[in-house]
Image (cartoon, rainbow, N blue to C red; front, side, top):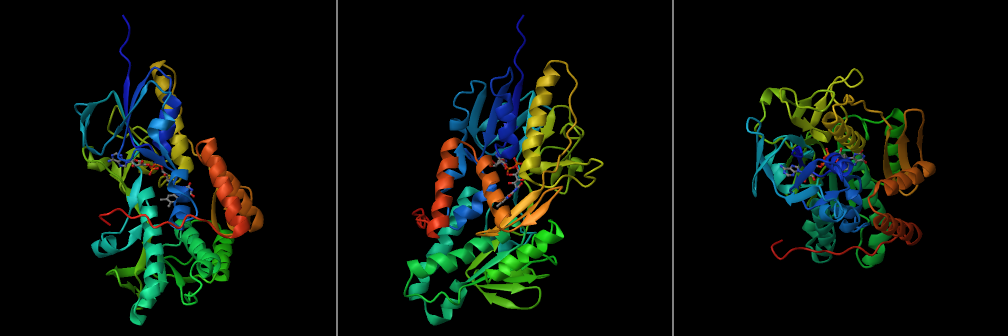
Length: 417
Ligand SMILES: Cc1cc2nc3c(=O)[nH]c(=O)nc-3n(C[C@H](O)[C@H](O)[C@H](O)COP(=O)(O)OP(=O)(O)OC[C@H]3O[C@@H](n4cnc5c(N)ncnc54)[C@H](O)[C@@H]3O)c2cc1C
């Protein structure tokens, strides 16, 4: 008698989920991929959408297109609301689904640390839509500036970025280059000399999780680009017009972008004792502790290993490799073969501040400047899905490089907005 095919329900098609589905494509396992978006998103390049350098479609990839030829991968666009581990079932916005194996790859959302006022008024950048929202808001405020009353101008001219991790640093550099190269050409009659890009960081350093070399080089680059950097400083309140800092200082601003942290997208239903710092506690095979057939991978997984006793960094590379390892293990399990424990091979990290200004930390070498910048571009180009998008991005970057300009500054709001 033919054995019934095993059914995997995979929640989330980010870096981790996408690689599970790709590895299981064409296999004997039925996969149901559920995501609240209809596309995979390449988050490291959001800042280029927010600063009008890349089209959203260059970094967003519809699942139905990716898996057009994969007969065993079904796709549903839905929000997963609850897990019922006893019945091996999940509840979603479009009904319930049974599973043999459940894989949670739900990633993270922006962490406002419980400050509802900041959450209401600040912009964040955790989805392609939010990156477009930043683009709209910043461009619209430049338009408003032309006819703004003198007392309103300062708040339109101050762009405050909260958090000097890679996202804050990359956005600060991109807005600064926009101020220098693009705004004088787009608005020849407007004085942008008072436009200030202010980068606030709670710790002592920009790019605090990187090497000493990266920290000091990024600070130097930001200062060369005239970004106002304030470390050991954080925002305690923001009402849409004024940001209040822990130092007591206030900044008039209608542009606050919050890049100060993330927290896991936890779905209710599992034992809260196995949720650590808003991540599911997993064993070395990414199985959620206390469960038999539920796995968590990527940003949402908390795995302790001798090398990473407090969990892995929340990075694309960890997510991709956990996704691949889990898919291979499921295939091995069905063949009765021994499964492989996950071990993270740290390939390093990098960030770019502006043209010819990037920092790269590899395990065996740390460098910055011109070569680091080309290295950053090459690597990101290679990581982007599809040849068409690689080419489009390459031409966009080449054009930006030569002309110091782009033609993507569209303000596209919905009627409701
Ligand atoms: C702006 C930015 C820049 C970054 N830059 C870098 C970088 O340069 N290098 C690097 O290594 N990492 C970077 N990261 C981190 C990296 O993107 C993450 O580590 C990675 O995306 C984690 O992958 P994941 O699959 O775990 O989660 P994600 O990629 O976040 O995917 C989660 C998916 O789950 C879906 N989802 C969530 N909850 C539900 C639900 N309840 N129901 C249905 N679907 C759901 C979401 O829609 C999403 O598609 C960056 C992150 C951001 C935000």
